[in-house]
Image 1: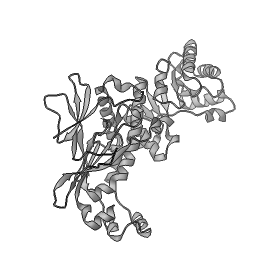
Image 2: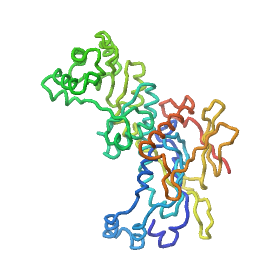
Image 3: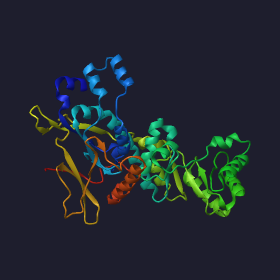
Length: 420
């Protein structure tokens, strides 16, 4: 596409591309935007190295004119969109790229690969956090994902309410709270469960969490209390009927005087399993596989479509795709969250050049992310995660109560299109 557009001269025409989803994947009631910070961090250093240029040349992927363009590539356009952590709905213009066709074209796969994955994980994590209520969720999915996806998933989970992650690299990059646990292999390594518990307690202190279901749960809990006393921080359950196990272990701990010892449960949890444990005496949830795979919905189904382009006379005009079932809406759009007098969202309003009325509770959703090639401050690194987490928490409070439903259904508020 780039080579042909350079040859025709159209590559340098001004365009506007928008990222949106036509529907919410998996019948989710809302989606959560994540990945903005990671995208902006990558965009800042988005260049083509000599090795990459040589590969394209050796394989004759593109011609010399295109190679010359790529050698000097630097994004110079402007990008607006929803703030990271924001709730989105069908057709929400979560990202807009204003640039030449060549610049916008090059970024397409980079943008979609980040936002589709990160937003899928964030949406699943938000549902899990809502189901957990005041109990913390802990991200433990690194072993079920590509090594870079594991970092992205940890970041997205913390943005949407998770209290910590076992991924130390995510902690290093983004200032996330890191947590850990012992595996069954640690217990099996030692000649006895007693030796394993003694080693962990001596090294990590009595406020550590001991894994108690390697052999016999009751014996393990009694042993843990014998060795650590009432100062034992916690026990972890990773198998069996977690509701029944948690109830039994809580009663046992209390009978032994360990009323302050927490119970953490793991074992392929998702939002439905977490909701089923609401009445169980559980203190925290460790979530892995289902989180990093989007809890059965591994992509957000976002697309990247041109909505405005410069014609041969230099005039900007809206363009739209008319394909059956995949039609798009032309024109560079704005978005407003309509809120009632109580501050509850009632609609996602989308149109060209619209703004929230000054005499309403409505909220404008678009923010500047990149201006003339310069990434705006506050959206990347640890600060970006903190701000995104705060944005998500505030956005959740605006949603109707129906947003907490886990069953598939329609979006919790409708999307309305208005004329400018």
